[in-house]
Length: 168
Image 1 (cartoon, one colour):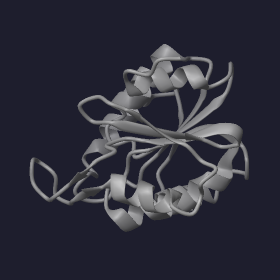
Image 2 (cartoon, rainbow, N blue to C red):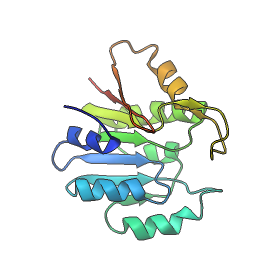
Image 3 (cartoon, helix red, strand yellow):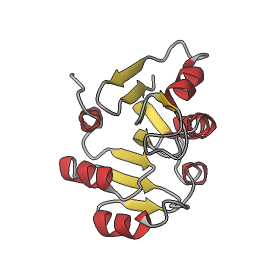
Image 4 (spheres, one colour):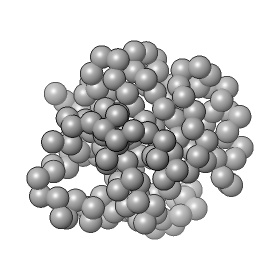
């Protein structure tokens, strides 16, 4: 199965499966997901704290009833999802090293066996280029995997690369 864009990840989710988007912002990706796979139970997680609070109303308008919106931090939202309940978690929230590392640890237990942990912006960049914080996703994921040799990292090489890891 060829993966060229992050939307291709939806092929990995079973019919009527579940998907958690961590870091929803204005809801653009959630809308794409719901159009491509209306059968999926979609959860959208974001705390919409400054400087992103202006995107909350936009997300509500864009997403409507297509998803369950959880206006919580990623870590708090992960506690509302049962262990091994979801088919895929896609992390695209705070891109700093510690936040990504914490997200990986928090969401991994929520994924079913055979499900996937995935995320956006699999790269490392300094502050700038329109970003107010560094992008440290690649470093955090690589470190998180360092003591898990049984897991295989896959990267979708697009302008903003995504990664995915299958849970055995």
